[in-house]
Image 1 (cartoon, rainbow, N blue to C red):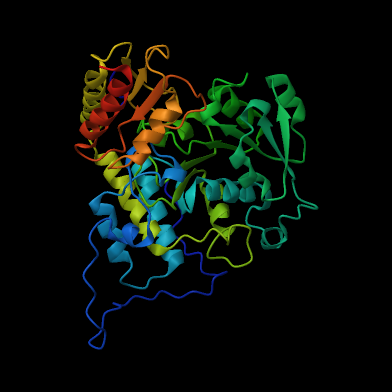
Image 2: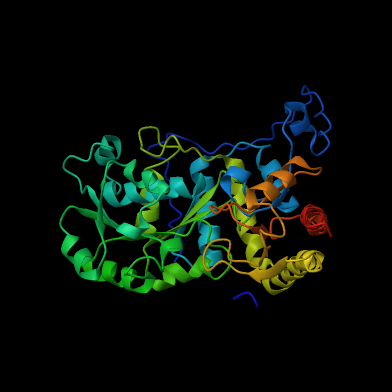
Length: 410
C-alpha cells in the first residue's frame, strides 16, 4: 500500500502584553563556558528511568515522537536570544500558514490547548471583557454541538471554557440544536466513521448555519495532505498535535484556519495574562521548533518513508513466519497513526501466552521494547514501526520471535 500523498495579519499584538521587541545574545565574556552535553541516555539513567524502543506509535504517554536533529538545533538556537513573543507568534504563524495554504496559524501547547483556545475564540472573540470573564459564560454563547459518538476524554479541553456540550446524532438533530446560544460545532476526526454525520457534511452544515466549525485531527498526520485537506473541506479551525507525526516538540500543537478566529485564539491564550489559555504557555523554543518541524515535514519524501516502514514490517513478519501457529500481517489504521503496522497472531492452544504476557516480556528485556497498546488481552500483538530508529525493527523482530518460539517449543 502506498502513502497518499491569505496569510495572518502582520500587525503586532502588543497592546495587551506591554511587550517591546528585545534581541540580544545571552553569552557574555563573564559567562562560564557551557558544559559538555551528557551522553544520550545518561539523563534517564541518573533518574532511574529506562528508555525503550518505541514499537507503539505517537502516544503522549509514551512521549510521542523524537525530534529530528534540525528541530533540536533550531530550538537550541532559539534558546540563546531574547525576542518579543508577540512578534515571534506572528512571524511563525505567517510562515506556517504560507506553507500549508491556510489563512492563519498559531503554535499552541499541544492539540488540547488548541481546542481550548479555539473554543474561547468562538465564545469570546476579541472582546477583552469576555476573555477575562470565561469560564463564566453569562451573557455569552455557551453551547458547543457535538455528535454523541464523538465524545472523548479530551473534550474537557473544550469544556474548560465553560460551555455546555450539546449531543446530537442525526443531521436533523444537529440543525434543530443550533440556536443563538451556539458558539461552535465540534468534530473528532478519528471518529469520522462512528457518527451519522461525516466530515464534509458536518463542515457544510456549519457553513449553512454560519456557525464556526472545529475539527480535532491531533494524531492524523500522515497523510501529509491533511495539513491542507480540512480547511479546504470547509472547517473554520483545525487542531493538530505538534509532537506526533510532525515530530516537533512534544508539548507543541498547531491551530490552523480562519484568520479572525486564529487571531482571537491567540488573544485567549499566552502570553496574555488574564485569559483562559494563559496556563498553556508556549515558549520561543517550541514555536521555533514546530515551525522548523513543519518545514521538514513538507520537504520529506513521504513515499520513500512509507516504503521504509513497509520494509520494517516485512522484516518483523518474516522473523515469525516459521514459528508453529504464528502468522504476521501488515495493516494500516484507517485514521490516526495511519501508517504500516505489523499484526502478529498465534493459536492460544499452541502458545499459551496472551498479548499482555508478550508485552510484559518485551518490557522486561534488554533493550526494553514497548508495543502498541491494545484493549484486548488476546493472542494478538501489534507493532508500530514508524517511531523506531534505524535498526530497531531488527531488534524487535528478534525479540518477538524468541519469546513466541520459546513458548511454542520451536
